[in-house]
Image (cartoon, rainbow, N blue to C red; front, side):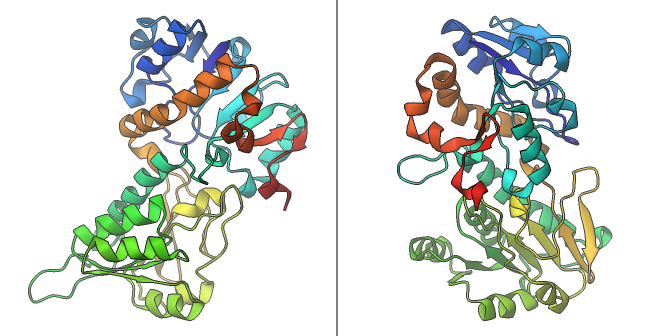
Length: 353
């Protein structure tokens, strides 16, 4: 099969879906792999690195999409990509269609088959292609939130870990999955008092085992409102697979927070879990509502493309190999579950709701 790997077009997005070593494996399996010129540079991979393993370099996006049958990219297609997509393309990437009705309609109009990384689900209910980026996003959320609390960034000027004679900062994390648990672990390691909310008892138990400065609670609305009120940093990591995220933090809760506090919404790709959330980019990552700093970048792992590209490629390569080499790939349940749109119709149940 002809596999096309385009350059990412979202603002300051540096990832590439397949690193040279992975492309080399695909070439050895008899596939033709095309990579758009310069697509790997921000991740540390030159065109020559790809050519060395048998990849063909496409001069531009138009030629890349013309050559490819299976299009493998990281983020959802936007204007620069959509004009090149065809009905016969098999598109494999993050889509997050629950929060993007216009994109959904465009893909339906094109008529292609779109498989979303975030919808590929194993038999145990895990999300193997979402997990690595969730881990990275969780860690970035704590790093970014810590930085935004600095007074020159507009924050309240608080050091989360505190020190003798000062109080510790407080971090509230909503959701204890891959993203939320990593955010909480990093915040706790830095010395902050951390409160984690989740509905699953096993996750709450795991969070309690992390450190003495972690409290794990069930997400009763009253409890969330109480803990958010005096939080320095709130990280939203609520996930309903392939569906739009619920608004867990209301505008009134935001208004109750101290000026210079910080909200980081990891769930923004799925619409956001704060009522005051709206998508931002790395070029203009923050805005302020009721004197509270909001960080809602939709491609948080794109800030560390070397790490992110290696991680996502290792996760997706077995699935790319199956898509490219097995005409009966739809019989493989994890990939079948990942189909969002096909032949002009919405396929995934979460998108039909």
